[in-house]
Length: 394
Figure (cartoon, rainbow, N blue to C red):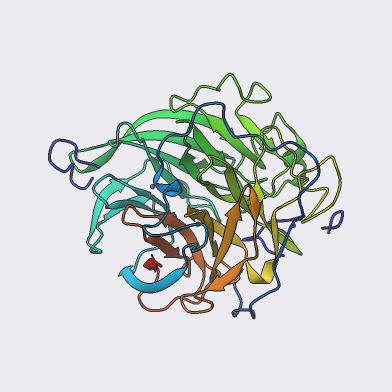
């Protein structure tokens, strides 16, 4: 069973630099499988596609095309260099305006600042992090209006994941506020990705914490994509008057917006199919009733499905309207072209070269930073694992 991976096809069948100047601050095992026949959806079930918010999108690094990219020349992997070494399960990665990034280490709760040259500096540990199975210190995001404010998704107790804010001051992270509690935690399926959307809201991917029924309970925060204000408030245009934006998810660990402000998400399957989904306001994505493409009008079908041995998709970045997906069990980086809210045919890169790939983030210089996850208990770590890879695009 792909506990590091997602579920659905047939019924029941898958986060400064030391405060530069005056605040210039500016995430399955097994050997690699052969490149798979991933599949994409046909135009779908008739449910209207809606922008994730009524607010006009603002500039976002995750939306910016690589220099020279065009619809006829989508970006592709060109080269790879190892940027940082000997980290322990790096999970969240969030860039500061300086071009350095905050990197969360899941088990210890420590955050390190990694410069574009690979220099590492600790900025402290996030308080109250519990190392529990797939939980711990997970996603990080930096406030686009005040880069001294950092948002973190963490496991705080054996049954609670939460979202908190911290301030980066004097080169150290210090707690600010707890924004959201009550996201279920367990040894598996904790979700954990957090991003600031083009609407200025926090978007959060959660897991079902091993209790599949949570995903269909709209009052439960497990198995959902959540949307809250940066102060923890519930936006008035959320579909159910709660933090829930969409439901019926198994374990969401990748969130990114395309150039039109559409939200995409990766989801781990169980036994058969992993997914790349286009997220709709109030949409039901079927888990646990459907794994993969069910063709049931009650549920939103995925845009792409993979066999779980070929993916277990975690991190997601979109550059030049190509989705780059980190695969854990599949040990590769998937490239999926996006056009008009539709996903094209996936292509694999880096297959088997660096082990389990967890987080994928678009860097300010147009490259991707990709973390390995070989020391998470399911990989075969090399002496210099875990690593951050800098992937250049062409």
